[in-house]
Length: 259
Image 1: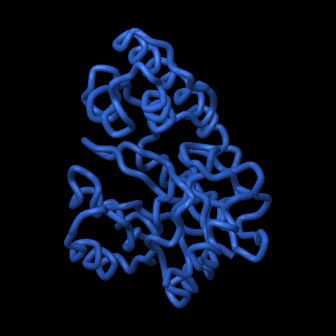
Image 2: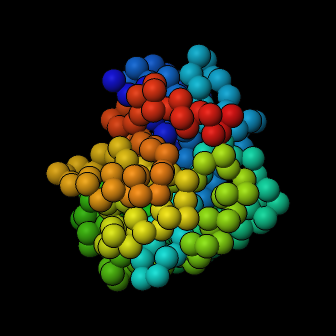
């Protein structure tokens, strides 16, 4: 049984849940703690690094994409108390998200010869655009096909984001969070290089639903080598929590760091 799901998204980025729906989703899954880790955003309706909503502990977090050498990785910050420096960087990233989202939508509309029903505003991500493509009656692609054929990395309609360099992202999160973790380390093109970054981090996401068989030995080796705190979560973009996460004992270590 998962006690703490430390990786969940809401409608403030590319998730389907509102913040008010999180407690019900947590209870449905038997989860006691949920971290809200929206992409490049801190949820404005969470007024403390750790709070309680309808009997569920909610951690104010963030998932920040950073560039690290030849690849981009995601950092999870937990127990956020935003600094002016972090807020300025997030504002910059949200402006870039809107510009990039608008460019992708225009590319798809030109390619397919149709108009998408999608709100290009702060927090927009490719899942929003993929859902709009899937919902359009004249678009031949479904949600997965939108990524495979149109907006995935390397596709004709894809536009890259201007993300934060790793060192700056790490420093910004370290100054604002109680704990900084490397997200889903085995998802990247070069997991070894991604895991090497944990030498400069507090934690690593050990438990994650990769959807395939993975050898977690390199992650466990990094935990031992760098004395890392272990985190874990479902990376929920819908209403399903508790797919992956921490036991109560494992969360206790995290809780001590984030207050």
